[in-house]
Length: 255
Image (tube, rainbow, N blue to C red):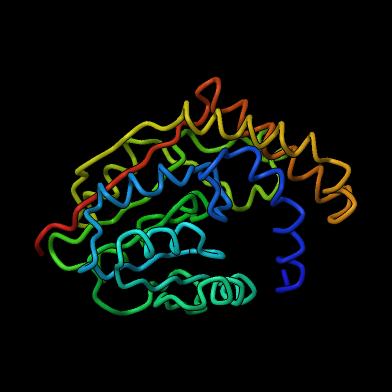
């Protein structure tokens, strides 16, 4: 997606997103997380003005800019999309936020106190390699703060109806806990946010439906139908427990 296309996409959905998230809760995120949830996770990860933070798959970095502005931390956002990073840089003008374009993995080299991965672990089919690389840029005691869609892998029938199913790789919670342990992490905090994210998914679904004419005019019918179909599925799966959502802070143990 080009910068112009991404800007058009964001603009087409902005009114509906603002209505769905509620006052003060929309900060440019492209997820089911509210701003208050983002800040709560950052606090659990002990982000402060002394922290160096690496934000993987940051997109246009709405959550990253919120965290950097709230806590005054050193912040580097990374995403494989040049258009997303261009928009992130534009929106972060006047701040100390830094950005780079990079595919993940590999995780950019460096040493960080906190690594963030919000709402995108789902897109990684092979999670162990990613977790090992995250561990490699954290000192002992460093924190990995992320959100996680939990469940059994999609069936062939489910993949057939899920838009962009090649980015949907569910993992059972026990399996992820084993992967974290094997790569040198210990979970320090875990919260089930399934109910809250189901409510947000429903709010987005209703807002997109209410603003359908305007969104279709700007994005086209096919893009709108994909958007709606995905939200219908996520809402239903979160409601019945087919998928559960978790927020997690894991600490890097000593080598």
